[in-house]
Image 1 (tube, helix red, strand yellow):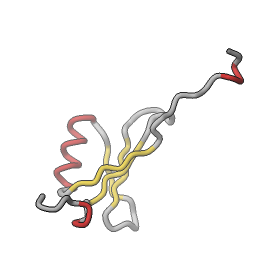
Image 2: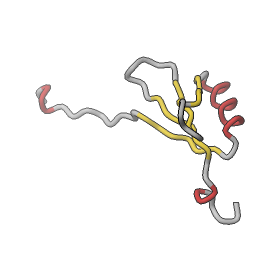
Image 3: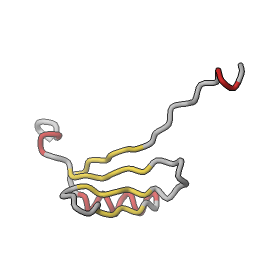
Image 4: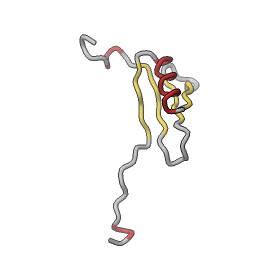
Length: 74
């Protein structure tokens, strides 16, 4: 297979984590993975997750889970 025929594997470039308790989630993921999580200026409920990797590693966001996202009875 020539270089022009090679297919690139799919990559994760961005992810989002909804949380009922943002402060608890920030502590959990920060402690577990060493992520830096900072609120984005000008947003109400959105925090940037810096995973600490090189430019080709995914970053993401943490946001407050809205009640409409919760399963009934949860």
